Image 1 (cartoon, rainbow, N blue to C red):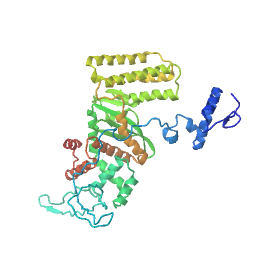
Image 2: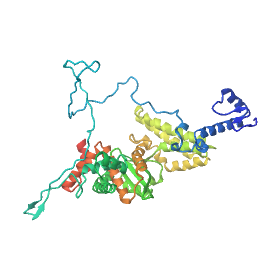
Image 3: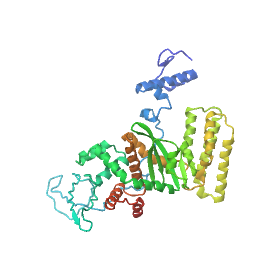
Image 4: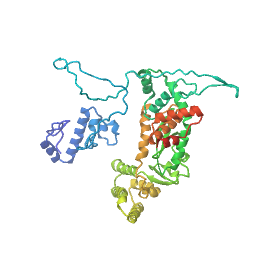
Amino acid sequence: MKQRTAQNRIGDLPLGAGLTQRQAEAIYAQGKEAVVFALLKQSQMLAAKHHLPAAVAADPSTPSAQKPVFTKDTSKRGKRPGRKKGHAGVCRGRPERIDRTVEHRASCCPDCGSPLKQCSQSRDRYVEDVPVEVRVETVRHIIHRDWCSHCRKAVEPVITEALPSSSIGNGIVVLSAWLHYALGNTISQILSVFNFHLQFTMSQGGLVQIWHRLADILQAWYDEIAEDIQNAGVLHGDETGWRVNGKTHWLWCFTSQTATIFTIERSRAGPVVLAFIKDCFDGVFVSDFWYAYNVLTCAKQKCLVHLLRELERVWKYKDSGGDWPAFSKKLKRLIRDAIRLRKSKDELEAALYQRRCERMEKRLQLTLEQDWSNKEAKRLLKRLTRHQDEVLTFLHHADVPFENNFGERSIRGAVIMRKNSFNNRSEKGASTQSVLMSVFFTIKQRGLNPVDTVKEALKIYLKTGTLPRLKEFTASNG
């Protein structure tokens, strides 16, 4: 290789944005060392141009969020928004309710200013908007106290529009709780909406205290949701880190198609799982390979997407030598063949499908029995041997997926909320978080309006002293 005579040159060949094809071919002719040097130098020059540390630009393990946009791969793009070409478009439909009607007529021609002769032609245009002034309604309740001669006491009617001793109506209580625990808005954002836009002054402490009272009332629904997940045919589980008063906790999520329950616990071990999933659960539990789920005795399906990601991560960042390529290729092919087999289930006869499932299980068994020397292959082999009966469960259950995407999507809202609200400051706050998130998420899953449903339940609770069961609202909605 010719000697480098300048910092950004190889011999008499300059490096940089002006590098031509002929110069690049000349560098290639000088050998491997010249090509490596040229690529590294070009990378350093690009990083310096955009004020990016070379280590960040070159390190493949740098998280995507820490990489500037101009360094990311733009070759993979999602599908274009909107309907496909040739499909009919969709526009906003005519509203069912008309609140007021306004007539418009021009006084003169806008072009020449001449007077107009009135005709019978007209057209309709519908505009939906929020009123200019949106104010909180203040209601004065005159409560008459009458005497009961039978009970020998004064009697008052029950006010169902607000909690006892509260000057804040149930509508504001439920709406603010829904904004925070279901949509992830911060307390400061909610106060900004109420204090400025609605001209209703509230304090942060007062808002939090009324949420605690709401959670205490809805605790019965939380317990009902915990009972409902026991009857699920397919149950998903996931967990993520959480902080309570600066200490590490864990947010657990157990979800089915009709119910979702959250709990914030100090532990990430099996007892938390057993506290919510009893021995009577006879469905299929879908999760990742976290060891805490091993305490369950029911049928289980492990997330195969996690397994494929693990194979890719080892290939990129860990020991991928020896017989790792053969092990990885065989395991990937087995997983993809199993997924294709499941998709073709409706096209195959039952006996043929069963034979192919047995053949797939035999392939997995042979893969696990083979002697692999790579340390990463041995590590995954140990894991797969422990969960051998939980890898291909989805082949025998039509409603069981091969991945845990549903569980991860269910907990994603809480993860976004964690970034905005910075977790909880007390154990009471964590308990309120668990109850209200579970209630709002479950109500939405069942096709109900969360705000209207909770408001209606509070009216019944304040009138009768008992909170109605959540399934009563679900039945009325169906």
